Amino acid sequence: MAQSEQEILAGLAEIVNEETGLDPETVQSDKAFTDDLDIDSLSMMTIVVNAEEKFGVRIPDDEVKNLRTVGDAVSFIQSNQS
Amino acid sequence: MSTERRVVVTGLGATTPLGGTITETWDAILAGTPGARPLPQEWVEQYDLPVTFAASIHTSPEEVLAKVECRRMDPSAQYAMVASREAWSDAGTPEVDPERFMVAIGSGMGGVTTLLTQWDNLREKGVRRVFPLTVPMIMPNSSSGNVSLALGARAGAHTSVSACASGAEAMGFAVDQIRAGRADIVIAGGTEAAIHPLPFAGFAQMQALSTRNDDPGAASRPYDTGRDGFVMGEGAAVIVLESEEHAKARGARIYAELAPAGMSSDAHHITAPEPEGAGASRAMREAVQLAGLTPQDIVHINAHATSTPVGDVAEANAIRRAFGDATDGMCVSGTKSMTGHLLGAAGALEALFTILSVHHRIAPATINIENLDPEIHLDVVRGEHRTLPDGDIAALNNSFGFGGHNVALAVKSV
Image 1 (cartoon, helix red, strand yellow):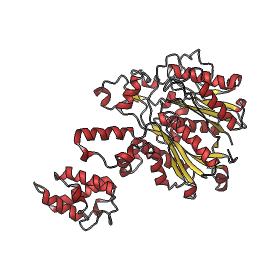
Image 2: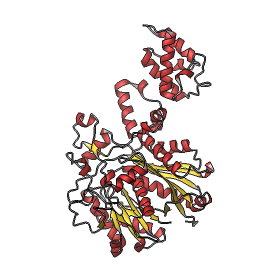
Image 3: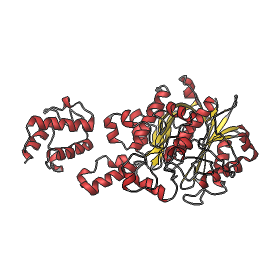
Image 4: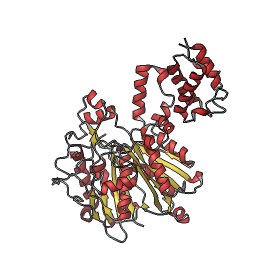
C-alpha cells in the first residue's frame, strides 16, 4: 500500500532524527543529505537500511548516490512501494 | 627518564556500579555499599548461566549522553566518554594547546557487546542489517579515539590492552609521555562493558566468578575464607594528568602526584598468578623506586584483591616479598568488595580511589570479611575506614591482568 508524500517525508524525518539527532522539522524535501544536513556516508547507509525496513522497499546501493535530497528519497520510496 | 618533570592529577571522573560520578562512587565506598545486584537480563535464564548477578553500571549513559552518541558508540566507549567529560570538567576545562593534549584509555575487551550483537544481526537478519559503524565501535581504541575527538586532543590517542591491568597501564603510559615531554596534559584511564552473556559465560566456565547467587552483595569478599571468585563489574574511570609546571601555571587544584608505573610480566601462566609473586613484587618495588621513595614511605595499598581463592593470597605474598617488614606499616584495602571487578577499568578506578585516599587521608574499609584468611599476612582495613597520617605520604595501587601483566602505581601527597 503506497503512502502519501507527506507520510513518507514524516517517516524519513523520524529516521534521520533517530540517526543524527537533527530536528525532524529541518528535514525538508529541498534539503540535500550531505550539503545541507551534514549527513556522512556511514549515517546515510543506516538511514537507507532503516528506510527499507520502514517503507518496505529495496534501495540498491547503486541508487543511494542518486538520492541527493530528501525529496529524491521520498520520490524513490513512493514510486517503489507496491 | 630523560627529564624530571613531575606529573600531577588535576581531574577525576568515573561511572561505576556505585554511582554515575566519582563523587557518588567515593561516597558509596566510604559508606561500605556493595555494588552487586541480580541481573535483570533475560539471557541469564535463557542460557541457564551458573551466575545470576553482577555489579552493573549504576547510571545508564543514556541518561547522560545524547541519543546519537549512544547509537554510535559501544557501551565501553560511552562509559569512557561520560568519565572523561566529568574528569575534564573537574580539572576546570583547561585551556590547552591541542597538540600538547593526549588521550590514553585502556580496555580489556573493547566493543565486545557490539561485536556480538552485530554478529547476531548478520546471522538473523542478513548483511543489510549490520550497522555500518560496527568496525569503529568494536575496535579497542574506540574509546581513546572518540574521547580525543570530543575534547580535541591532538598529541595522540593511545590504548593499553593488558586485560585487568589495562587502565593502570594507560595511566603509567600517560605519565611517561608527560615526563618525556610529548604532552602537557593527558586524559588517562580505563573502560569496560563486558556484561554480555558470552564473556560472562567464559568467565563462569573458567570458574573465576563467585556463584553466591543467593546473596550478591556478599559475593565479593577479598581476604575472607569464604571467597569463591570475583564479581563481574563494568564502568570507566579517568584522570586528568598534567605536568606540574602546566598545572601550576594555570592555578589548577592538584589532588596528588602520580609517579611512573612499575611494570613487569610473569611469563609463568596465561591466567594463573605466579604463586610466589615474583613478578608482581618486582612491579611494586620498581614503582616505589621510580617514585623516589622507600617502602617505609608507603602507608596504604589499594590491592588488586579480586576475591579469588588463589589470587588474593598470591598478591599478599607478593606484597610481603616486595617490602618485607615494611609491609606492617601499610594498611591494605580491597575495594572490589564493593565495586566488583571492572576488568580493564579496574586498575583505573582503583587508582582514583588511591588518589582520593591520599588526598583525603582515608583508607576505605574492605567489606564482607567475616573470617580473615589466616594465609593473608597483611593489615587489612575492615569494619571502618582508616585515617592515614598527616605529612608527606604515599600509597600504592596494584593491578594484574590475564597474560601475566603486573602494574603498580605510586601516588604521592602534594
